[in-house]
Amino acid sequence: MAAEQVPATRVFAGVTIPDTPLITKALEFARIHLEDYAYNHIYRSLLLGFIISDKIPELKDRDREAHAIAALLHDLGWDYTGKLISKDRRFEVDGADAARDFLRREGVTAEWDKHRLQLVWDAIALHTIGSIVFYKEPEVQACAYGIWADFQGPDRVPNGLLTWEEYNKVIAELPRLELMKGLKGVMCNLCITKPDTTYDNTVGEWVERASSPKISWTLAIWTLYETSRHVVLHK
Image (cartoon, rainbow, N blue to C red):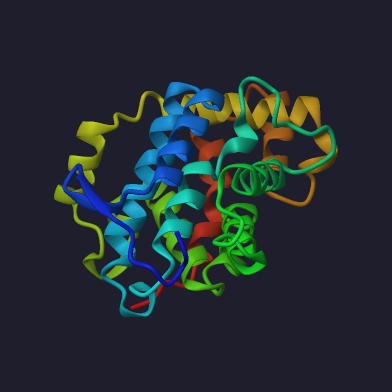
């Protein structure tokens, strides 16, 4: 579907989201490569991102299909099958590359030009870097809003853009399934299997945490997301 066209929609967990054949394929692709907790996380990130972004005037006219696909494929760098994992790139880059390859393979070439592909790649590659991602294009910002909201909850989203009622409806349909326990495993595994990709980002914090039993898991999680204090959010 071309960026300027309005995609068909469906309602899930009280949220109106785009419904295209390519989005269905993205969901199926994510299901193959992600464990249950990760699959629910990416799906919640899509829903929460639409709830929030549809309330921000500057983001309403975004490419909704690109936003949806970026959200659904943003954690392919956690692929438990190992097929999408490189030996020398950050997990965000692995995910971005896998999503771009998916779009080149499954998308209509005439509809997925260089710009649209780059939007999805950037949304995924930059989603953990709050000091950059919230200054990018609307599609990139919208994707990040949903991802961050899934970890932080409604109280960290300003101006009432996500209510607890909206959030709880999403959680009811897509339970968290010990997301943070799963995240711990992924981060520690990255530190062990490709440490050179972890030194310039928050994943690197896990090297010290994994080697020091005296440091609590709670502190590790706090450190991983402390950069969220510097996020610039739209009013």
